[in-house]
Image 1 (cartoon, rainbow, N blue to C red):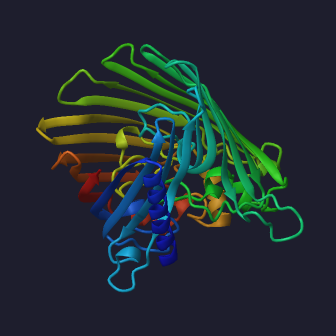
Image 2: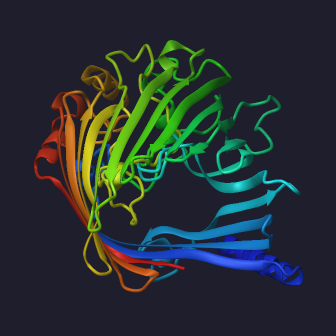
Image 3: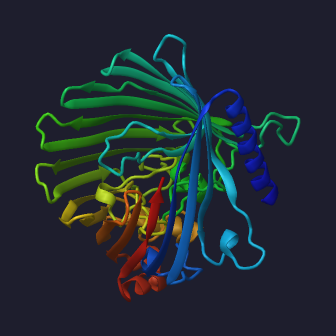
Length: 483
């Protein structure tokens, strides 16, 4: 790790020297976050999802991001982003003796416009999300993360219609050489296309994505999702429970097709009333064994009123298909890659919370629910508040989840509190408070409470009794500095 840090610093110095010689403009932006989190009963139990480990009630977290843009001119730049990722005090980078350095490159991409046009290319490791409405955390329930890819944005009608497309390589497990003389399908590749349309008071973005899933890629060993307590692997997001629970426990085809189609919509013509919606269908492994297929539908809608000075009322609703009784016909949940989604920064979902480990990690796929929020409340200068209530009910069959748990173990694929049956619900309230100490420095104090009702026959007496022995409660206080 020390070598990686030294290499990152040398690259920065080298690029800086080249920038100076070429009269390149260098701009740096970033953010630093330090916060303490007291969390009673994360995962509704205080344990890991499989019930084998106990969480510490209090942890101090720290993270740092630095993004450096090397700008030759308005049409050409390169970005290098390095980070010290979310790490608790006393561990890793922040331990007292022999700290383990954890600096890594999380963004590294070239961006340029083709000469004499507005066609823009972005190549390298870059932030990417499929099209989505801006309400739900400004993120996508299918894919929102850094990826290695090549994306092109082609304006068709200035400020009205454009075409966005590209190639993404999510995984190449064996790198450039496979371990045998026989070619191994170890890649996971994506192809994306969208058509953003922006009119006065209305926007719509139809989009589609295909992915070729290689059988030998390491999905189970690849964490996806965000910083939530349920940090699912790609295998859990993409595959069905039947793939792992029923023999043979491998994909039949060397390569399978996944695809998603959707649309993101926003209506501001009735301002100060604003409306948002997303509709998505996803399908994967359709030509493989029936037990390996995964397909489903998801939609969300939201509205807000921005005509008040002191607050912004918001409401939202979503619905998703859930699992049926059988594992043999595959999964009825929409496949995902790396999700970040949540209405009004609800404490129940992992979306755009400012701080690490400050949500319950509930999965919106396989559920329905609603939220109501009083956002952007301000009664004192520089102090703002957000109060959100959220209710979630499951759309998954109790029998289907029970069968999978009996074979794989409770928490191995489905997890209590994350995946809800039709007889289960969770609800939560969070109050988020922000005080602007300076223009770029905020103090935040966030509070969250959640209650869940779960089935003993699905998750076991020990897990459910622990959840009934008190509700989840969280307090997190800290600082966020942006520059």
